[in-house]
Amino acid sequence: MANTSSRTLRLLSLLQTHRYWPGPELAERLEVSPRTLRRDVDRLRELGYPVEASRGVDGGYQLAAGAALPPLVVDDEEAVALAVGMRAATQGAVAGIEEPALRALTKVVQVMPPRLRKRVDALQSVTEPAGWSSSRTPPLDPESLIVVAQACRDTERLEFAYTARDAEPTERHVEPHRLVPLGRRWYLVAYDLDRHDWRSFRFDRLSAPHRTGARFRPRELPTADAADFVKAGLRHWQSTHEVDAVIHAPAGSMSWMDRWATVTPLGPDRCAMRLTTDDLNWAAFALGSCGVEFEVRSPPELVVLLHDWAARFSRS
Figure 1 (cartoon, helix red, strand yellow):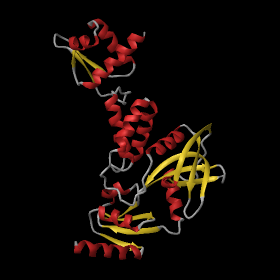
Figure 2: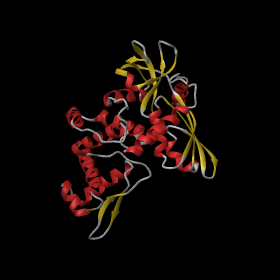
Figure 3: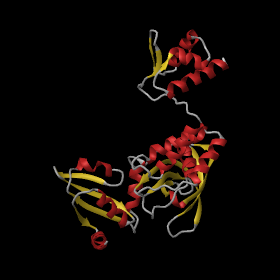
Figure 4: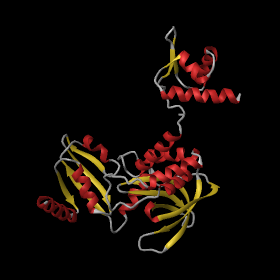
């Protein structure tokens, strides 16, 4: 049975490597007869892999696209490449995929043997991303992200050190709910067991997270979802800014801004954009990235900042 299982995994790996395998060549690679190969292919089909076969002298096998993504078999080099690429994605290398990249990274690292983890860490330590994120964006520790993401997924209580704004460091004991990437930062939404209330924690102020092993029953959030909870909390910070602008473009064309702002149509070619930020430079960058004319209705400090930017750009 062990030989059969190993051979099935080897067959799956070969089918994922090439689009099409002639039957005799595939049987030779596996060192089995054509009849045994057919049985192994049937076993893969029973497991949900859509293996197509063509008959005749030149007949063979290929793995077709299915209705759902089946488990993949990757070699060592591919596993390292996946982990490094997903780590870069969690840090904003590609806008809009940070959260799913983190979920995928969590799954890969969980099953990765120690020898491969060392290779990933070595490659990551000498790699410097050249993304478009602001130099003022707080750096994140991927290992801490993985620990917290796993605790959220497994509904396991979490402990970590946390330094709030203008406050002494504290130890927090929480029931983690979701990680939320918003603007230039990541936030952990969790139920604080010491304060008996929901809280959002800025990830760059969080350190040394560790899972306690204690499971919990998920509580109901006081808002529609975790992103709404973080946004509601940001609105109550005294040092945050409420930005209100009119964009000269259809609301549909600004859908890529939904992660950071609320966009509402004002007509066929105009829309209102509202966002909350603790850094007006980020707001200026976001508005400039729209690539169209816009008008700032508030705050007046942003108007002054944009005039300053315009003057410096003109002089450059």
